[in-house]
Image (cartoon, rainbow, N blue to C red; front, side, top):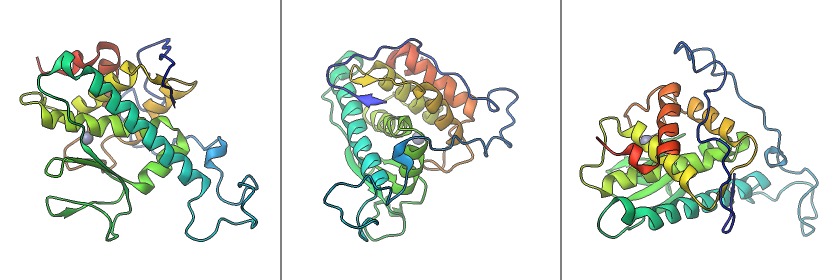
Length: 250
Ligand SMILES: [Zn+2]
């Protein structure tokens, strides 16, 4: 998925399909091993010989980010811009008041002094979350790095989902009975509604795979249930096809 300031999303379809092995009978126990292997150059680790000319050693100097780290961190910045621009431009269509974006804390390494706390609780590994009391969004570096290595769409989905929680927090009466599925719906509305996103081949499959990977068995955000893979994909598709309106409580 690429952020573009001038290309409109050319979408052949507004829905994504469940990936094989997770959409049928609700048996998700055996698809944990179904992971696409990294196939892009982005997933190649350090020392591949494609370092900048200034690098004279085979290995990346200690403490320097790898090419993968540089890539996924750049993608998070693009995703923040895309998601924020969407809500900035659409806020008045759906809600009253002035749109204020949440603070973007960005990546953290759980257990380190720099990791954020929310309501006195330290940020945990493998999570991404919106903190209502601090009005900020943060994500575990390892979660994003590994997700990005499988497909860049993951970065957009996670940030759009957490931004959805920030929107829930801003609008009285917005939050649905299933806030996590509503956040998935809002993420779908954002990514498919953005005029800055250009979908690439494989993106919709990546999004389905990400929702599958991040379904209930992983501790993504807080303690609320995120729903199973099928529920999450359905919610995301509802937002993708119906826009923000489809995510609002009835
Ligand atoms: Zn959530």
